[in-house]
Length: 85
Length: 223
Image (tube, rainbow over the protein chains, first blue to last red):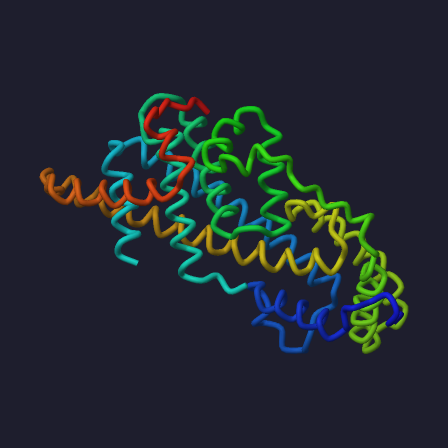
């Protein structure tokens, strides 16, 4: 590793990788230590894709739901949930 | 970045703003238009709530490529949108980590694969590169990122996506619940409470300097 050019240590990379690993939903099953990085990348990609699909699906459902509500009550409900939290 | 409660609140607030600006709750327009408006509100809200990151800038940039999104983005982002986006020329930077990270990733996968077939480490290198390319396309603005930034931004982006999903799910539940209770007793909301709520919303708007002027005109956006 050329220390001349890099200001990032392997430690920092390891930290990033392990954080990414713990973010993924599948990692709990893994008993045999760290997965290969190729596997990690694949699971990360799959995870991001599934999250985006969920957002898409939720947008569908929200728009259908809001259609059946009148303007003010939908918005008021959002405001109320903001005040609650 | 740990998805904090303040991020979720900021996101919800921004989304409310977006929904109101795009007048999505009004019954005009097709279901598809309404869905796109909600999705746009959600994505912009996520980017705004997170602040300045490479992926948030990348997201806004890709959203603004579509004509129908521009007026909405202009409204929400105001001056920030008009200013030419600072393009990240990664070629200007010293390619500090690309090779190092690639080597480290290969090194890490080698450690793993040594337990089984030592030859697979060679394959692992190319596979890692292929999948890195896929990831670059998934993360907004990823194409121009070096490998280390990509990992860092991916972590941040995925965390925010999780929060986005969580908040939208909670919103669904809340709206569904209120709908049911509404059917139960039609007089659910007393006018006094309504004014109080709208006043709260009003005070948020007045803290955004750019919006005060625009909201006084309140044109309906067609998305």
